[in-house]
Length: 299
Image 1 (cartoon, rainbow, N blue to C red):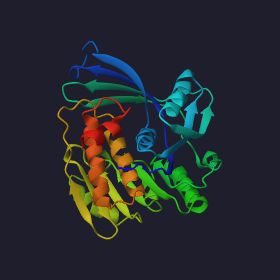
Image 2: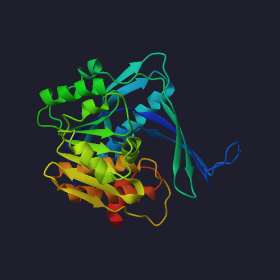
Image 3: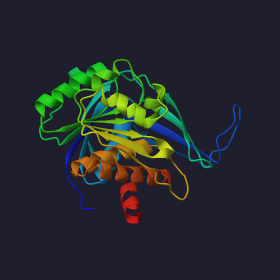
Image 4: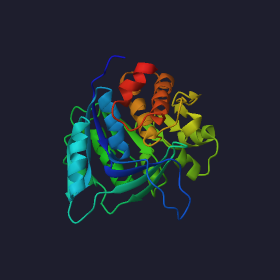
């Protein structure tokens, strides 16, 4: 498919991921040897930007960084992946947020232990970001009261931009982000934390509470579900790779492909079908580098 080139801003965190790949997940109090060990740059919005850069878009990130050596490496990784840093508020006497990740070769599952003592980006800092000419702005649904102010500023300063918000997990005041974005990208973990076992029931409930024109709900091995303000509701079954190798960041790939599809003007059903295929392909692919081209070459 012809590459589209749009300007995209992602607002969220950037982390250091320390990944240990094991033959299988260890029992408690075990001592095991890793099959492989490496580090990666993590963070939901930053991961999605890395995929969107592979689609050919001009990608930009803003957030906070610590004042340690790891943050220098994160900056270099963002640049290597084609992501321009619009704002990285340096926070003195802090440590880079770090995720310690176990990848199981047997199941492809990932278990994450996250440590963070870095303040979130606030609306006052975001006011210094030049917003003209962005085609899309994507927010992680973090610190909702501050994020709601940032979202409102985008609407004023860049009224033609489309806005998406990721709802990954329950947070106080998260409902403040239900009104304002064009679309909501939702995780299964968030829906289930609210007590919903059926994706359709969750989407109907949320649709009555948001002004968003569309909703996309990832549901892991069951694929994804979607809803539009026109009343269209549908489901796309998961794409199953030959072998599950690495599920880390599959949801971020899904979100990126949804944003890409909407920027291309595809209908939501087609957009979600493409996104599910990319997310499923990612589960059979180690890491992020080159995943979009690899997926498009076989799908």
